[in-house]
Length: 214
Image (cartoon, rainbow, N blue to C red; front, side):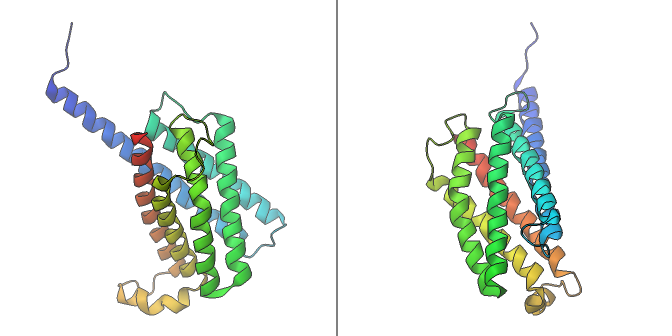
């Protein structure tokens, strides 16, 4: 019988890690693009409108794809802990959190409103991420509702979202900072979305590592 020596095992392990990294980058880009497209569709639309409904649908589908790829990264492509109904339930609830976040920011207005909305998002993402982590680890969704392990990356994601929205809605107030960073002339919304992508990648790296520990 043919055997795999240590060198081949190392190569296979490296390939697996590379594949998992690519999946993580992939679902980070999916979430970033879904959020960016959603905000573009709904930023100037009434809460009850066709544009808002389309935006919510786009965001939910993007999050479904993100969660499916997250599941594949953690549990493997051939093993799914996130069946279809749960994927849509988890994604739909998260999409509604983003809608609430944006609504609070717009309702309060200005930098202060965005900061308050960011703090609210951090709090709401903690139970959201705990339930997602439970599902991905194959335990009952509501076995725990608040897990301190998910608090860290929930705050990270909320910070990224806050920076993004500040640069989209209040970009003119940060033109000096962008110029100091060598980004003078670059659209602040694009900088914000890029910053969100970087933060989401960090958040996903923490979240995937936590789920694997379980």
